[in-house]
Image 1 (cartoon, helix red, strand yellow):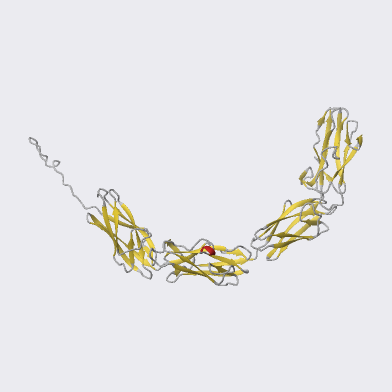
Image 2: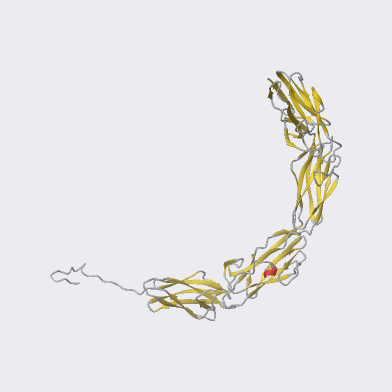
Length: 485
């Protein structure tokens, strides 16, 4: 550059500018493509100011691998990718032909850019099983599972990358086989509900897996039959079955019955809720028999209103796993008893419960009152004592089928301070009320057959409670000191 009258500097008055041609680069999501499968690749332009470009992507060996501009389009030896102005990247798809293997060079070219290339290798594809558990029970529902395809890892033990069947390729048929069909079978769209030793499902172009749906929807399912083990495998012609994930050992066991008691103790003459759980729902309807190991100590009942027996039965509908029952301590008896549940097709279940001496306590009685105040109703309740015997830790009702109601006696130590009253007569030192079978408490009011405290004069009195046979008053809550002011 020169300006009249100015001297051009010898060093900084000139610049040498080098102009290079922009380049194209080819990037592959994976360096291998399974035969009959497809994989995505990308083309990138190093300059965006091209005003629109048409990039040609070419396979060096179309007998092994084709290229396509879209996932659902059948590949060709060569495809043109159209770039809008300022666009620098676009995807293409590599489709390895069925049965073909070998290395292929992918070249991307455009006259204004230096061409780019990458090498991809077509390899034998692999297939593996997914979704099949390693253990189940003989009465569990059929479990759906599937196969998927792709590129094996270097050891052939599992797939390292999933790839879909190529567009325009062959629908692949996966055959699943149970090595011991007497233990478990394969159910598919053509078999009956009992299945068979083998079953098939399909992988259409554009997908890498067999249907996740039920056999009626084109999937497959494992059908349990008997206790034991079976090896389930998968195979597709031309595909390598993965040595680890292409086989599944499934262990089948007989489900059991689990029993639960709400608490570990039940009082003599009282009752408590309990429940059970079947280990599998697909039993077709089953009868569970529950048995007490010592019916002179503990009886069983199907519900809170039915007298107990040494053994009872509970019907469980197909698809249902839970059931309930009631445990009943026999009056005057104590000890630990085992409850056993048996049901066809299930292993037995057991639980233990201890029958203990029941406790009784006072509730609803205030600690202070005024002389001449209205009578104050209160009540007693029965159940299980805590470990220290100071109070009830859980209330429990009198058992259904008990010999009769339990008579509870309330006593005031100083009737001149406060007496006990009921609907039968004037206040007295002692009065009684009853607890009926199915209930855990005396009536809450005098009108209903309960009792009340009648304050008389200033002072204090101890109100105690007792019941026969065998009820132990709680040390703290089984007596109440009332101060009359």
